[in-house]
Structures are given as C-alpha cells and as structure tokens.
Length: 104
Image (cartoon, rainbow, N blue to C red):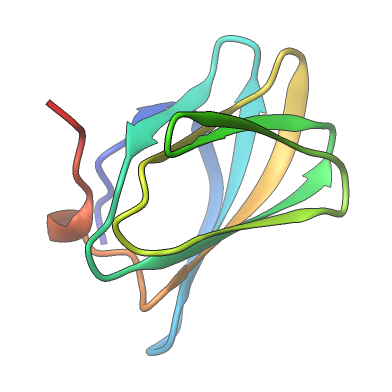
C-alpha cells in the first residue's frame, strides 16, 4: 500500500494485518506529522525512544518514552519532536488513504 505522507517524517517500517496497521516513524526536529484526522480510524502512538509533542484538538500533549497517546476517530491530531523520537503508530482498522483528512 502506498501512503500519503501527512507531513515530513520517515516511515522505517509498515506492517498490516486485517485488524490494524503498524508504522514505525522516525521524527526529528524538522520531521513531523501534520495535523489531520480520520473518520473511521483510531490511532495509538507509542513512543519507543525520545519525547514527542502532540497536538490533539488544538491542545498540546507531551508523550514521553514508553507512554501512549490514543486518538479516537474525528479528532484533529499531529505529532512532532524537538530532537529525535521513534514512534510506533498503530491504526485500527488499518490506515486507509481515503480516511486521511487535512483541515482546510
């Protein structure tokens, strides 16, 4: 499956099952996931290394190493870091390009 990047970040790995998709993302100070939302997908971000700064419905949230952030459907969200972070993004159901929406 080809993915539209919702920002400028590196996808280190992408795996998919019928139930979910898992993407390992590398974020740096200049690489980020821009604010977007999904109508059908719940996303869970698990920070493996570093610290990430997320925005959820325009509110800042800090996600430290080994913490998770759950983002329900129809919730505007984005994620970035000041230094470097390794983040596992879990999408339930699997991420679908037609269900990625950037606010206008």
